[in-house]
Image 1 (spheres, each protein chain N blue to C red):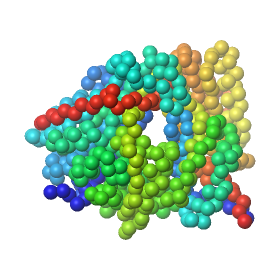
Image 2: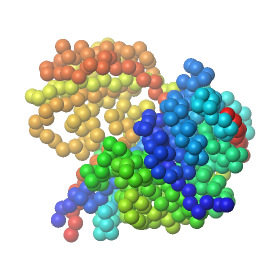
Image 3: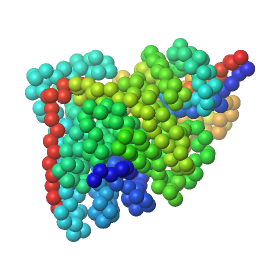
Image 4: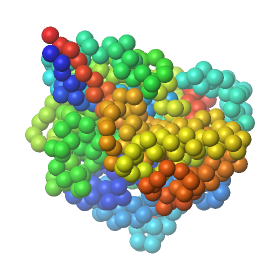
Length: 454
Length: 104
């Protein structure tokens, strides 16, 4: 029999989020599904690099400890878990989870794994068959960076997740699926929504957008009356209560901190969107200008009235390539003349870098506490108590970056006075991973869904 | 009469590649009329002089009394390329709310 509502809980908003939340979501109140988003734009390339060094790595390692804690609870309560934490190695991730299940004596647990998103090795073939892969933001040709690529992943949507659920999976581990699909796949599966019911699909997508950044929808990073948000230390992550007709109620468990209001949800709706009338996903195009919000009782917001449009013929592809190095150093200068000292130090350092003949594509100086965030908009203060000089450089030459790193600490003894804050050692060179978004026709690539049983 | 944008609106900002998205949400209908009228792309571009080096796009979301701005060429290359402390533009909604507006 079809359920008349399902509750989908957000467990992670990014790779590195609060580790206590997934367990809290499945123990503090009723939920049917737990979704966890681990992947940002450059995350896949970082995981791809880890896999290169160690073929068993390449997924969100945090996920293993989280699953260890979750397993007994989700088995007991029959809660399904969906996550893209498989990253560049969903199979390796599943193998580790299977080991955890065995250790806990859990038998018969079905884990679905979604692969096929990694097209780095088949790129030439896909190019031959007609994919263009021009940079969708700059129009640049793929040939400019093709040899430098370290990852190329298709953003799959809900289809392969729904397939895994239909095959009986209680846990679904994916590679690069869209953040939103982790939330709306269960709705399609449970309510038997059809693939051209655009309005319902769009409702699910919007619920997904609200959940995908975790605590950002329930009082975290809230720019309005942020002081009014209760007990952020014990913040409850958002939960989407979904109904067969596409209506959604955003809420959170009782006895948790944070809050769910029209204002907290509205802020999250605005996060990282472009044209609000065309929020493009693999399964539909959602119209954010159709969303209606209504505050029900405390910590419950109704989301309804949503209109969707047909899906496009393309998948988004996210690629990444190595593009040189950066390093950033900082020093703290105190009163008196804090800012003038920091400015003088910057001048001295730049002269020394130039005397050494180092070449940088860019040198960027910011004064934290003065203008780092708001640049020229920052108000001028006469007497600043302390200023952090932050100086970053970028270059294709690792040597120049290393040489820069050695020039920061000497400023302490050979520059302006009352300076501190160099306990962290020399700045490290970071590899720059440049991002290359592109599109590809959907018929050129298919996800693969497999089921493993413990 | 001069008012501060932060007294009539809130918002959130983030990154889309090298572009920043800045969403501004009015607290009430009257505030939405004010931001619709005063937050033109030209005014926003001028406000972010020295921060935004590309074009400014504006989208209306009357359903939640909001305007979404895309500030192109703003994040120093974006992602791991950027040398900016705020490479993801997370503080730019607050930066726009600093604006003062002259109303009748």
